Amino acid sequence: MLNTPTLTNTELVDLWLHGKSANTVDGYRRYAERFFSHVNKPASDCTLMDFQLWVMTLSSSDNSKRVAVGAIKSLFSFAKQLGVISANLGILVKSPKAKNRLAERILTQEEVQLLINSTTNERDRSIVRLLYFAGLRVSELCGLKCRDLKARGDGGQITVFGKGEKTRVVLVGAGYTAYPQKKTHQSSHAQNAECTHFRFTTGTATQEIIDERIW
Image (cartoon, rainbow, N blue to C red; front, side):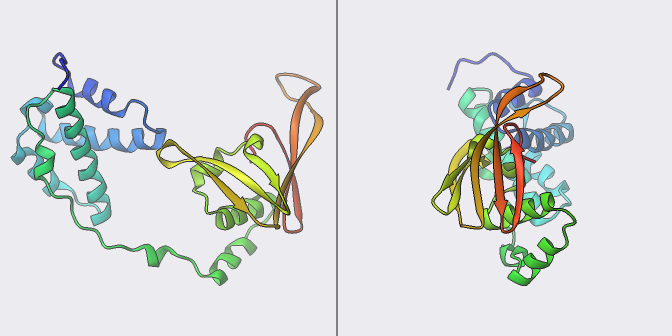
């Protein structure tokens, strides 16, 4: 237990969320705000009954309930470690069970091909193909930069910074290649500035990208 002065709920939540990803901060903060709005008291005064009554107010899907309850359990665990509360009530609250619907979300190869074929330009086609063949999350793909791409044999290597602030390397096959080219790029910030370009090949389509965000 740390020697922590009395904190407001907002201060507690800020400390709890410090260092987490932007998406996690956004979602968890909403859960915390709704919880404290319901109980209308400091975390140190919350009871097990408060926690259970709040759970009963959740009207979303079982999976969303599980995430919401898990977030508040995490908050109370953090508050206990910080010394804000004397006992962690969260360990006494069971998270709702949610049906595993992974199989329902898996697309067949035919469905994936229809999705790829539905794109109207090579940029979008490259995005959909890369999402599928490299198994990237949307946030991971949006954060890719040229320096994350590297040619490797007949294919390529992608360095991905993803969920949980973890870095992983994804190898892609011969349908995707990336190789650097030095070119001149004009921008609103600097004219004739030197920057690294890549030619990113997906099948028969080739897209040139500059050393910032790819898409």
